[in-house]
Image 1 (tube, rainbow, N blue to C red):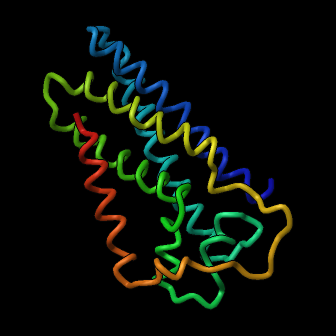
Image 2 (image 1 turned 180 degrees about the vertical axis):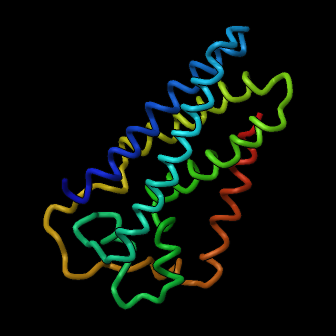
Length: 181
């Protein structure tokens, strides 16, 4: 198995489990309560696979694996640690994965506190998550470069600011919370 396979498989698995969860939650919302265990398990698998895909991308950054286009474009061996951390959301692909990760976490708020509308809320939230998953399938942060490089290009100079470590995650937490029905 090559390095690309785990990230790609995790995103595809997240896509499939989120789709199953959304369909199952819509059945539960219509009164077919026998689908609730399937819906919850599928959502948990979606959340775990999203978290694992995020961890895998960080593994690629911290191992300086410049065979990957995204790692090559946004990190460098001599970058300080906090810029390697913020390289995760330095480009579109990582930003979508970060946003999806926060969506996965906030979906648990719907499950815990949405009372009678929780199932419709989870069905709607699955559609929002499908949008990001579709983007991640098309614009994968796990795509290979044509030829591996010895070092990366580094983070865009405009993004080399200590506030970039906290600003985008805080912003995307807000965006994710806005998607809560």
